[in-house]
Length: 246
Image (cartoon, rainbow, N blue to C red):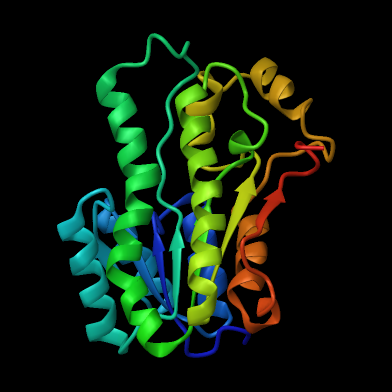
């Protein structure tokens, strides 16, 4: 029970890595707030783990403010924020991505981190403790071609993680990131463009361990980084990638 009675917000928490993290955190004793655009899926998962579901578009300040208020109203405060919500795009040359797609990637993958920080960091500063975990990507470290703007957004997340860690350390707030490799989640087909045995084999060939990541893999790393066992760990972007970035 490494997260006993901690209150954790997980954005994009109704599916994929977010759902894996929500399940693991609940099993470790946390009160989990699942923020997601898919309200039905969030409600279903909240019912399974005894958490709270909040419909939220984390690229909108008003939604993030309401999310923080709902978490505080239900559970009293906020100890952990996992910025997991993210969007990608199908493989496409960088000069052919539409402006709408580009704007959406930046809004969900980067602006959301600013918005959650704006709402929740003051609460953590007042208590002199807190943990922020950002789910970035190996794409931010070792980019694949034709995913340029997605890769760039994840590189931004990694740099923001380190900058936040330095600034917030004096307030007892730790900030880390996880860089997952492609995983068995709903976003996998987006990255591959088309889910065929040939394309899967091409992706797997770049992962020395020889498999995609799973929500359970990411959840295990997230649990450690958000627990007191990692009390001396901040500013880290941990690659959970089966050796892809070596």
